[in-house]
Length: 148
Image (tube, rainbow, N blue to C red; front, side, top):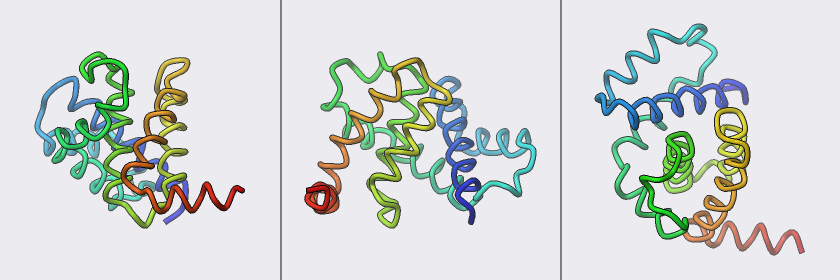
């Protein structure tokens, strides 16, 4: 799959997590709504989209717990878009081990720049960087050592 198809899958999954956070609708109805409303669904890495949406929404509590201690305000005070991006980023760091942690963080930053508030990307970067060190300590340490 192309890089753009993967980016589009993340954007679509973000819309789904955001929609779920705001509406409380079931994961199935959110997915059906997104797929029905999305033009050029064939240009989306559907496997990644479904994996991110389902994986994130099935594990919201444990994902929130993994980053709640890294932020300086209650999770319920996060903007819905930052909340959704952190949930997805935490899911990818934990479950998509084939994706390098820097790619997960960079993709989350791009989502925050595209959909979030002015400095939301800095917040997302800081939280996911700390979370990556907790979840993938060997990979993070190796990357830092390689930088010199």
